[in-house]
Amino acid sequence: MKTYSLQSTELKPISHNPEILKKVLLDEQLSCLRHLSHTVLVPGNTAASHSHVNSFEIFYCVRGHTVFNVDGKDIAVKDGSCLVVEPGEDHAIVYVVEETELVYMLVFK
Image (cartoon, rainbow, N blue to C red):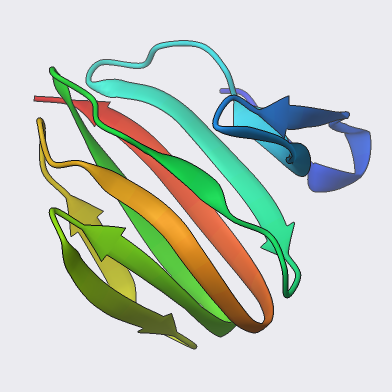
């Protein structure tokens, strides 16, 4: 058994915009899970368009409202919603409507 805590995890920049910080709760591969992270976005934050060839990226919105763009389509992610980006889909954070808390993970296909 292993336990992880946000309180004991240090902040790190996300790779697509170093101004946005995250806490990586789980940074070791477990079966198909590559990482599990937590971040809080504020209005003005964006993340550049990118894709993952061999991984799904799953975003769960704990609170707030943010707009992602996935393969050219804007997708609103709000309290309690979950966005699954499939391998190869270009995706970006384009607009943070209000402070948004996200838990997200990369999962190998």
